[in-house]
Length: 397
Image (cartoon, rainbow, N blue to C red; front, side, top):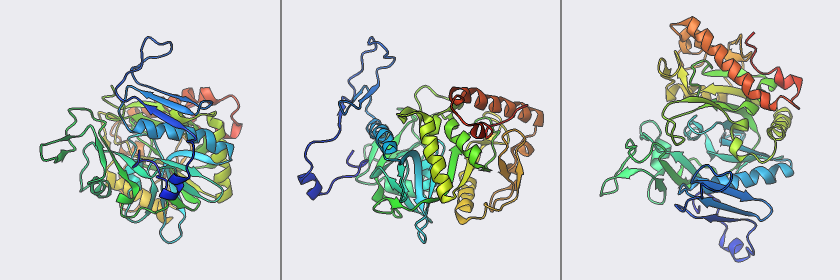
């Protein structure tokens, strides 16, 4: 946790006093499955009244950092600030930021490791009245199949002083990032200053762009689409992606999932409260909002292929440069968003999903299925949601 959280200075530590919050981490010691409501040997319990958290049955450092994140999801909205499960980068010239929302496996850490941008952080941030700041002092990246050729910044950051979890190495400590014999959920944690272009302290101005990353296992969503304000709120509350093999225990192939605000397990208040804060800040700062699919193209999982990382990078770079703000687009007949049809350095034949499928009737069926999954999921949030936001969802009729 000295890597993952921001450490106090010697002066701050000398005058620290009593802690505001205490974490008890029991590591391997399991939770009692016979306890009422307990379904697993792993348990993370938070009590705001006692200002304590107890972790049982897991050794992932990520449980502690997510526990602190949950605490911030309670404290920050009370001050009118938006706590966000996202990565953030900043333009070196203007210090304006960009925010990338996304669940594990969607590319949030990978796409934020961009040598042309200043890194603010890869996972947990707060949007205040003055800009964006990183809650953490480190990064917690997936290490499965990590290679210097594809992810040089993360690969180079995992040197002495970093912490690796569940990786396999030989007697000389040469790590095999492709070996998943222990688990596919291998991890690397490193101080943010191990990234050459990290901005210290990790603070930046208001964002110019918000990107919702999704790994669409159906192959239905386009590589990039521009969202209206109402569509942005709908997709933020929906938080669609796929559970990808390697991110959760027992998941061996992608399955559709929805996680409110792209971080449902960490939400303390109703999702609408976070959505309201996002809407207010989007309006105040005139932010462009994008949906970027880092999942399947040319067909669903098992038929199509995962979009190449270099294409996703090219899309994000074009968003940062402002080139996509006025790019050619066509309205998706089901979801209503503006599908971008021309992106520099990305083949145009993959940008409109239906055109890239060899079996277009199969595409239509998959698209209607996904649209109905969105609608079914949103039934949970329908009550108390404005008609404008509801209109931002798909229309499969």
